[in-house]
Length: 215
Image (cartoon, rainbow, N blue to C red; front, side, top):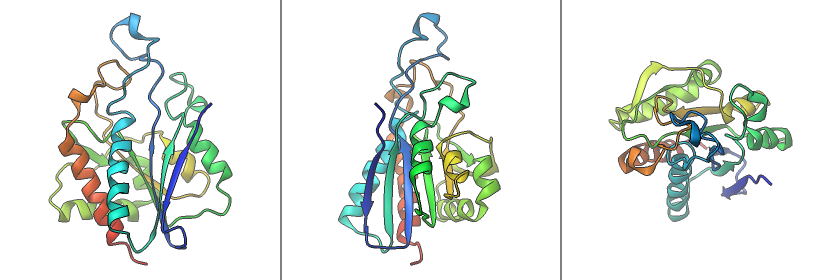
């Protein structure tokens, strides 16, 4: 059984922003160079755990210093469940959430995926820039003002991820992702390929965006 996890800060506030990540890891290491590993689940230190780690620390900060707006944190399950090349089998948790969202229409959402790479480099994800350039600009300008060089000004790849399921249902969401990661979907996606500094800079940028959001 798959399970999405949700937490809300200031649930009474009508003005809301949501933060999301997927908390599952891929059940098959189908890109591993060793064939014998292809049916083993990956550890997923970056692809899954990094986004969750940042959101947990953000949640700790929000509890200590409540923001002026409502914040929802959503951990999606089943993002990485499908067979490669069968996109309809992926993003199960976000598909379900988008279908069941009803009148939930936050100001915008931010999806974090693969943000722990020790060699972190985050371009503007293609679909995010296409559909929500004003939100992308807000975040990248915040990063620039903080001197966070890992947020690059260039537009990167168009990446199918949980944010697409939300955008398609009218829920605005952008993706912060470093997809240039050689250990993706392999057994080598382990903590030693990640760095706490990468998690810190992403979390710092997001917190600054949240605390400076207009009511």
